[in-house]
Amino acid sequence: MSQTIYDNGVRMETLHRGHMLEEYGDADTYENVDARTDGNVETVVDIYESADAFKVCKKETVVEIYDSADAFRGRDPNPETEMTNKRRIQQVQQTESLIAGSRSCRLAGVCLGVLCVLVLAAITVLWIKFTAERDQLQTRYTNLLKERDQLQTSYTNLTIERDQLQTNYTKTVQFQKEREALLSLLSKLGWRYFNSSLYYITSEKNTWFKSQQHCKDKGGDLVIINSREEQEFITAILKGTEAWIGLTDEENEGDWKWVDGSALTTGFWWPGEPNDYENKEDCAVTGFKHASKTNASTWADYNCYHPVVGLCERTFRLK
Ligand SMILES: [Ca+2]
Ligand SMILES: [Ca+2]
Ligand SMILES: [Ca+2]
Image (cartoon, rainbow, N blue to C red):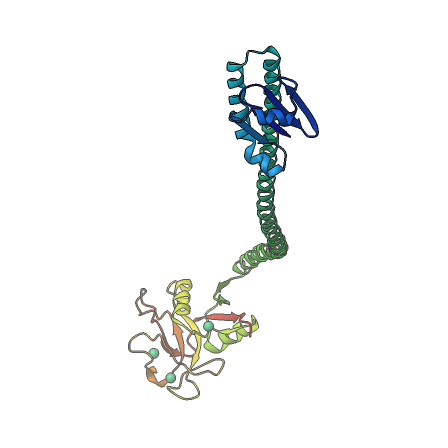
């Protein structure tokens, strides 16, 4: 589009994309008029010669058109020319609106593009974060499954152990009841229990030999004292009564041996014993009548035919 505006208002020519609007103030040809208006202020604006030129010149064109219209309006009150100027102003305004619309559309497009990029970036970040969290949750879930299986296995094993313990406890309780019943029965029969052994005091005073035989008849022997604890237990149950023990030096004087043939290692002789009085004392008693009742060392040697009760022992030690 080419517009030629003459400052004197004689002629104005406007070309729009192949449409040419020509208005002449008289009958002169365009060339003549052009020559005749030499010296007038002329503004030539080429619009749409090219898109780039239009972009550069569009703002200046609008300003110049307005200036020219004002100048024209002030100098030529011709209504027709004024109408033409109004139409031109309208066209310029329309062009300006189109430019503004195009600019708005371009700005909106740019904004939309930036928004799309931002949304895409946000989606990418969220996706990466979601993927990482999903993997972590998957790993955590797998570990929890393993822990659950381990706990299930442990629970099963504990349940088995609990059942076994319950069974053992039941058996132990039953065994304890039976043991107490048995000991009660043995006690009624005259037997006392201590440290895996049963002890029995013969009811009759007799020689060492007959007392040993009596013990054998009951499944035991005259007692073999192996420790201070056993000696103290025996002292307690005898309550000061003298009783044969399974110790003798009848074979070799002074060589004391137990009824099972083992040698004496630890003795609990009352002081001054054994003295083999009159060379006739080869059997041992505990609870010597002259010994202190508070002292555990109460052994003495007696004549083996002296009448004394016997203390029998029956062991239950498992080998
Ligand atoms: Ca013993
Ligand atoms: Ca002796
Ligand atoms: Ca003696």
